[in-house]
Length: 190
Length: 87
Length: 73
Image (cartoon, rainbow over the protein chains, first blue to last red):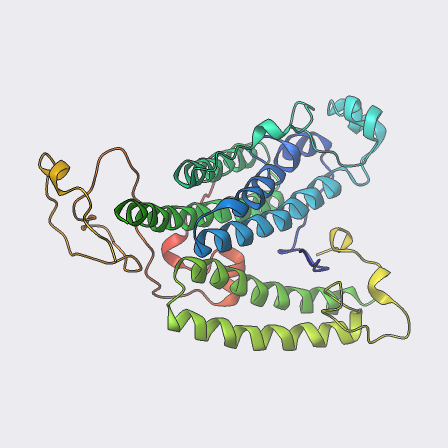
């Protein structure tokens, strides 16, 4: 089960409100390569993984992605906090505001709500680990896109940090793949 | 409100907690690594110390019974919550 | 330990020169997995070396210098 820790994983600061950037960043909250997709994908796959290491890696990275989701939520929250209505409308966030006000919501940068089709689970450990490695690369790429979209150095710092985590997660899933491939080979022999 | 001290203590906990996370993920794929195991345990001791000190001043950090509530009332519900902290 | 299941299908494979390592050991630039197969992926297994301090680790996003990929854009 899950225990909540009442702290962010890293400090999050913004130099000034920026609803336009909030509209872009929210894609890592509820978009296809966002932290919700990542955590649900890994936490869901772990039930049918064949080895303890795989279950451990999926549980632990899935849990860390929930913490990242909180960081992204905090970024969006702080980027919108204090922004006047004119800025919200000028940032093309009016549609979001109509349905959700200043509340967060799981949607991509275009406002399309999250769908379970963003995640997959085939019960084939090799296929599933490749899906995870691809997901980490895609998340890294999206963080790079978001870094290009802002000049705020404090926002860039948070995005860079989250991007580096994707690099490390890719490495761990890659290592897990090596062990799982070995394990599947041994199963064939016996 | 004394947020500067709170932020300073939080930063230290974030550093130690992050080392723990990195070692946890490393150990998941290197479970026999004795060096990493020893480091994980010594980091754990430091982390718990820092967390307990923080909790004495600012209330429980973990939910569901893993942290004590050392204040006169249920400080878990006090502000600031993590997304409200001004770093 | 790894059992060699299908020796017969290895005849057309190139033999790479490199140290024979067991799962848990790691590969670094200059070496490859021995007897690599087609149609599968390989990721070198990290071998723990130097570590960042906790302050540096939280700054960079990793405890391990060899996993740091700066993005200064």
